[in-house]
Length: 441
Image: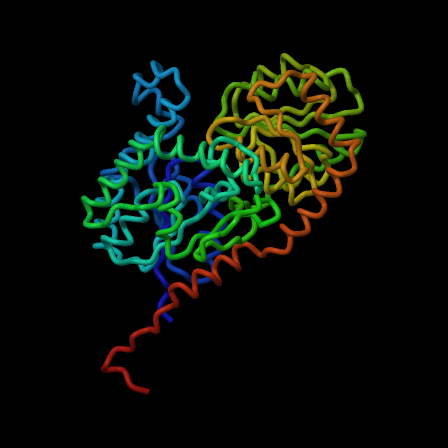
């Protein structure tokens, strides 16, 4: 059999790139010809996986790391909606023609059969039309498809099934999609016309889901809101998690964990650099609790400064931590709401305290509260007393433990990468190998 040629394409952002690494390595090890198109320092990460890398050429690398530097005018935008529109334009929509130029060039050199891309990669819709290929969208955030029972994605609203609630959610959705982000949808349709496609009747973010031949949603139905309907191309595949070689801690560190009565794990992810938001208030909340160990992972931001500021025996502050190694010892997970970390925490049966608002983290935090597997603090800057109270609630209210255990069982029932491969194979089977005419048997 000739290996199926699969090109991964992702936005140059941690939450869009990292969740797909485990699947990409799995498919490569299964015998598929896998390559990856991405910009910025993510190219090095691709090469470290042993995967061929195609860099952004025409496409500009724009993400949270350089957005304000590239576009200093952004700082003058005070309205959250104005900033949201600006970010959607600059990070996602305006990159679309650049993506298509690059993908066209790659396809001329290496005729890939399938494009696997995160939901934010707008090039997928247009590559399907321009290059005549199949596409697989990947939901790296909670399901963002519009629905009568669910609020407009990004607002963190709870679902409503009653008539009045549906009317309210419908009005909010109209105001967001038909007014606040109307120009974003207009630009998207402008590009569709430019490439000979009819305008989309669905809102831009819905169209990105619906136009994929297959849409693989990270997560499970038990961590999703009730919906009136789900599009037939959507498949839940369990938690998509980054590729890990399974690094192990030294025995001395593991032994230290067993000496404490309870262990709190706190992280702000790798992008958020302001440790005052979540790490500092967590350390403050438990600094006088000698039987509680706080493990804080900083992502390499101000690690030594925090160690000097909190020279206490019940704090372990590291740049990076092997979550799979530590989580079995932890009692509570405190996070700003990164989707992958939340999925991993739930897999390890951890109730979660979430303090995230922007970049869709409010949607994740709201689902934790709705499913009663965690507490949504509804702020990026919680006070130490808020964190302490939330942790005590999670440890004393048995409903959280019961719900987490139930959800962890559902998560464990999905063999994510093999399930995704099975769906992908049904979409685009491997080609039979061509035998040269002069060879006979």
